[in-house]
Amino acid sequence: MRITLGGMDTNPTEEIDNLIAQHPDWRGETLAKLRATILAVDPTIVETWKWMGSPVWERDGILCVGNIFKKKVQILFLYGASLPDPDGVFNAELNGNQRRGIDFFDGDAVPEASVQNLVRAAIAHNEAKRKK
Figure 1 (cartoon, rainbow, N blue to C red):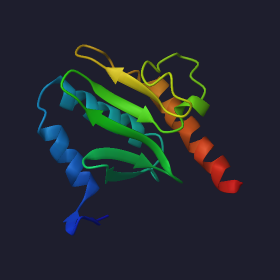
Figure 2: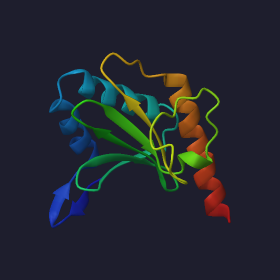
Figure 3: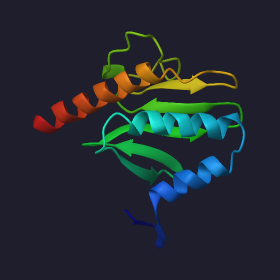
Figure 4: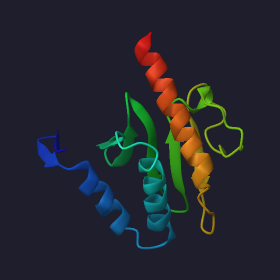
């Protein structure tokens, strides 16, 4: 899917590919692993590119946003405060009343099953909101 941002034609998948390629260290690897983990949950998840350069994964609304920073990679669940986190993987944005995130630092493993459970919960949350 191509979208137009500021008069420029862009492909979100290509933008995410480029972001990962620009970080050929652990950060690019971590974002690539998170991306694959998220997309494996449901074939109808759509990748978008928003907020001046952030990968976003959507299904019936935003599920989560990824970002690469100097010393971490973050995945932020827009409605994370409403999602069950039985594995306790949320470790960022805990003080807000809506978002929750997971920060990954050099050497951290991606807890695939836990992330996928959060993605499934985010999908269920978006579906429930849509039905109201």
